[in-house]
Image 1: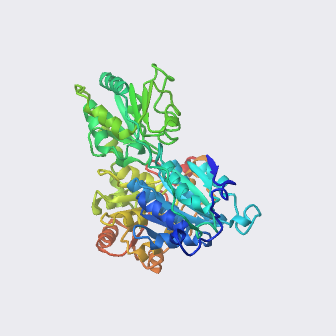
Image 2: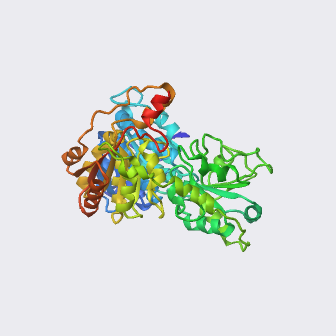
Image 3: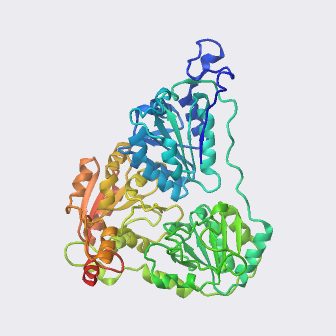
Length: 581
């Protein structure tokens, strides 16, 4: 959706957007458009703007930096800035801001904005543009930013008047938080932020109330769940703020619960009704309860390619009464988009689950003990992982070491890569808001996300889990952590490979190409060069010592764990795949 503000009515309204106000009377109190924008952001609860400063939005950076309720965070790369804004918003539910300049800056920012789109994360993006009089001339670094960003945002607009910037900002915040949350982008020509403008006469209001589940739908769902023999719930990011209500509903109807891709923290994993994580490489035994279910309630999940196991589950006989699937989602476009449903309700997950849990229904007698134990067995490291030979650790042993050393309410930010399969299985998410992970699969997420998480929640233990490939993309944000005094811990699974692609190549082609990373690299020295602490671990004892030291430190710490490149996934080795091919 795109829209361009601005029309020929400027002169008729008695305001010259290009002129400075006179130095007397009421106009003497006019402020810059950037200052008005900063007030709108702060009033909506925004707390940080992440950016690589650029010449196209000098006044915005200045206004944010000087505002008492806002913080300006200068990052080392726009990719890091976007990931930080996305992570903060995901953790808090309140939009954060990312800002970048013109073509190169906007292009660098795009990966994190796409992440916010696929992860349904509210975010406001300001893109500095060339000055108004140079637009359309392919001026220095000019790109059509509205066209560029439209496919990866909920809404993109180009401002053409300084006196409308506060209004546009309020509208951007509204769109970002209404319905299915997501990023919005505002392109602003470089001459607008610094213009002095009168106070905005009126601004768009807050997001409208989120719809509740109707009594009729509530009663039909309750009867359906109570009467089913093998019901399950699939809960996604839309249920992130409804954890207590989700638990209460599962217990009320004695219903097993799956979590969608990288949303493992929406339901306590140690709960006896937890059935597993619908992620990449989900073990077949874990899927059995979903495959055999006669009632599947999908709550706050868009049933992505990965969650649905390549659009295969939950199975549906088509729309209408023959389908065993019902869906509750805030976004009507998501209901029935992947599989037919017999009932689709546009409703807020929290209020819908609360109304279901409140009904005085008799709790059906069902036993999910074996299905829960099936998941537990897949989440347990094999015995040989602890004594892995060769001077490199088994990835399972790294996760086990993390479980022993770290508080179980730590915020874990995890990157993309095959190493993450061990983390997804081995780490138990017992507490809410403890997982920050991109469903888009974007590499380089973990370190910037950890910076934002620690800045937002300084009392929390924050740990980034990342492969050497992802670290070498955005690891320079350790400098940002050092500068801000953020004691994050970064655990690097260094195996010298782009592991996911190497696995696919070995499986499909019988050989690899372009997936080697030189090394082993001295990543601990890299961290120390950025002002952080660094340690290297090649066995469980060294890992335990390094993690203990990191938790006690007041500086960010990188732990370079040397892992075996042959152990490419929980089920496969590179040598086995290449030999089999």
